Length: 134
Image 1 (cartoon, rainbow, N blue to C red):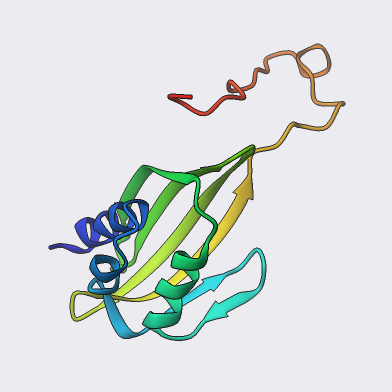
Image 2: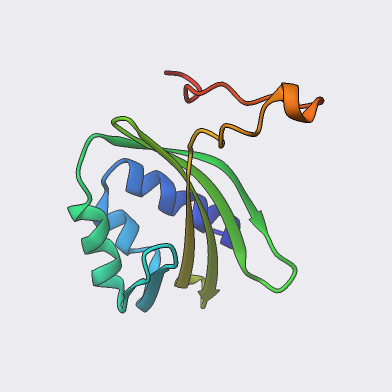
């Protein structure tokens, strides 16, 4: 499995709540840093545990997974959970074919401020507020 396939497989296994399968893609010393909340998960078991403890009822949709020239892999994933919708941009580093480090940035889907309108700006529009397929 190449690095892009490995990252894609991780998201597939997390969506399927296949914790054993997801754990198999991680190096034992894998870390996860959630930048938006300042949290760090310091080994592969903690990385999987936080995913397993995440409240059920959400879904993941992989938007894209791309390799960087320096060997890292970027993924953009849309997460919906009840009324919440956000996007996760993640940077992965791999070592010996396993994911060893992930840095994730979370961005909520939210209404723009009242001053940003087509009347004020001109050439402007918004994406639909409903996630695809809802």
